[in-house]
Length: 428
Image (cartoon, rainbow, N blue to C red; front, side, top):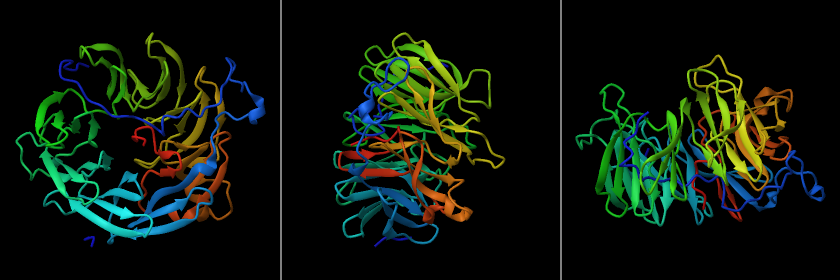
């Protein structure tokens, strides 16, 4: 049972699939003025059948829940020991939820019978940690990183340890200040970014590992920590690391670079690239850029408020993201969701009455997030929680106030046609 800007262009060859959903394009076609070409579809800006959405994986305090995507009604899946925190989003495959907890363990839970299946600690480090990452489960193996810079690969069915690797420069297993980004998997390799050390002065590194054995293939120092998830499209890698570097995978040369002061995870659809960034020379205000990835030109830009680097996503001809008005509380957000026309940046809707905490999660015409629906009722406690919004209008459809306080993980939506998460989630 469960217990308690210069990059070395000759080394880069990494990958993460950035998908907000499956590969299906369910956008509604707009004309050059942003108007719906087929009004018989009801004037929608995106299409999609919400009835395909089954449930959302969510958390409150030490408990993992599923939440009915149609009604918002929750079901307890498993209650962990007191003070357990989770790294999100979780992962899901064939009826099993995989979630990393802050005691440095990957855990598997059965949705059908609400049963705890197995856990796997990242070696002997079964204690609270600020270094755990969300799990990445692919091809029958789950990958995650925990405190002390330990990366593990475990069998998806049994939790059996396949291999481990430490990103400590000296190969040690006792440096609790060594923290990694979530591992990413491409082809026969696993790519791990280790952050710059808190006090040690150790630089950020890229570690390229053999997928089957965990053997180190290459370790390369980076000038900056990646500030978002790298994206691979065909032959090109888009690497956010202070600036956005666009790198040819054949020659490993930089093709072009968006020079900014900070940049988040990009999203690419066709010949368009959208990314949230803080412009060069600025330190507070952020901007959502849309670029033509072929000509490298900026097609349009929209101010997005305070310096939160949201992960926008594109659905058909629509861009979903947030505008952060700023707050007097450190690390808090005051973000308003919006939808823009991908072609010209014109606003399609913006909900000023909802404040959200996460980058948008889209599934079949619905946006899922956590936030505050200010005008929902007179009882403010019942106006904060996990909520669903109509992606065509921004209207709140339901809100579950059980999730108003406590630890929360970014929603993951399980539907008949796939598993949906934020833009940096690898869709299935």
